[in-house]
Image (cartoon, rainbow, N blue to C red; front, side, top):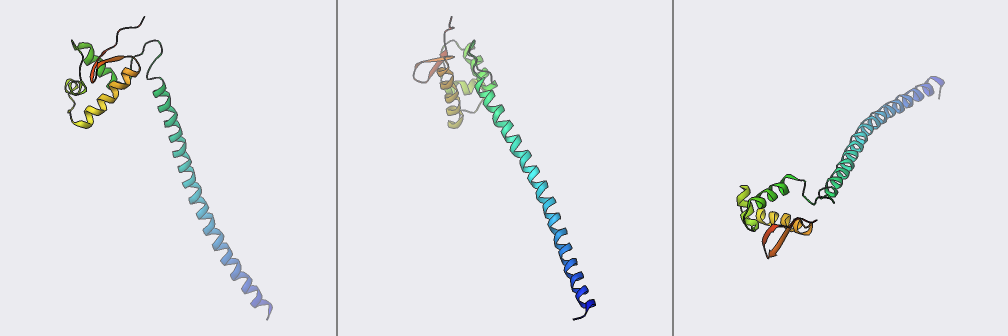
Length: 135
């Protein structure tokens, strides 16, 4: 073999290696961008989880056990204006919510949570009233 042929082979391998390196650099750039996007999504999810836990923890305050979120405030308003206790279906109707089974059960679950936090009482099964003010 002569020197020019050997140099040509080296040049071909160098070109092939350079092309492979360029392709790998492009893949690395693409993967780095995708990793940055996913890391950002993970950070956003962690922030959301922390925020939701904080909101859930502060939903009930120690000094005044009232519920902060709007659906609970609406239920309290309905019960405040009711002369007697109400059932979940009646509260749905008073709130203008379709009294379908899923809405009634969701309302009942909220009412039960409010009973657990001593905001409401359930003297009869399914009949909810405002709890007396604690001193």
